[in-house]
Amino acid sequence: MGIVKLIFVVLLVFVGFYLLKKFRKLSGKMAQRPSTNKILACSVCNMHIPESEAIIQNGKVYCSKEHLK
Image 1 (tube, one colour):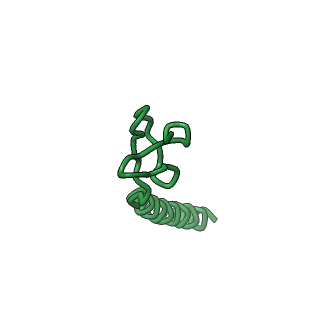
Image 2 (cartoon, rainbow, N blue to C red):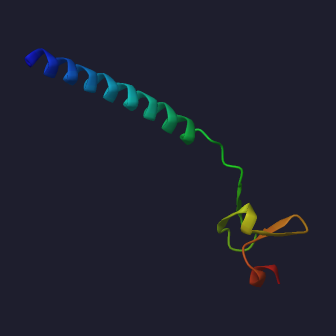
């Protein structure tokens, strides 16, 4: 009965290391994704905002309609 427990523990450790290695590989790939959304600075207050939320007019960047006026 002792040898069966030993084999079972060795298999559990092997599977644990295998899953840990696979998880680290996946999380590393996710962290390396480049961001497609640029950060821009408002021409009036210099607040940094994502490009998707910015108002761009005449080549200048604005963070709100108030700063556009």
